Length: 188
Image 1 (tube, rainbow, N blue to C red):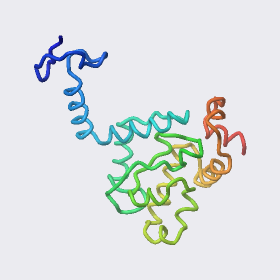
Image 2: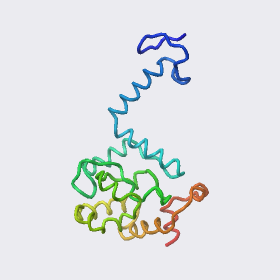
Image 3: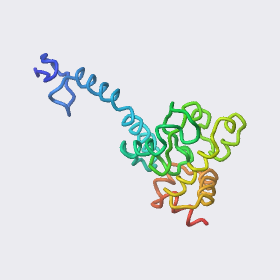
Image 4: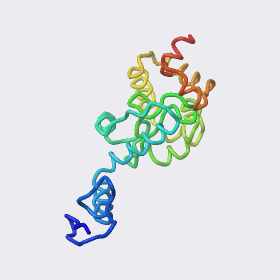
């Protein structure tokens, strides 16, 4: 029998192998409380996991996500909403980019649901989207993304289309050592 350091109860086989001082119930409660207090950590972790399953870059840290949120003043990057989520500009199903600082922005939850896995340049032209976004913010966001990817805005727009028209399989991603940006620059 072991004694839990948190609740003090004697437990039989109710400890995780890697956590020998807290019973499973106390460990779950501690993790739940941490997740509740650190939603940005949890968001970044979940998005990294999604990218990792697809063999895409998944190196966005909590601090990087917080810096991105600060840059956009905790607002949507293309509207005035504060009800935001992490948005992959190049959708994960294109199998380019992934969850990294050069592919994510904060976006309004409703807009994010509307965009899904669409090309952002085509999606913003849809009438119901075009009337709610702020074009100045959109252009500034595209300029920011172009800069973090080492491109001009025009090159970045071409890159978005390159990713859309050259979707890859997970096997292709795993076998390619070059980044999507490197593939694009080699193609032009």
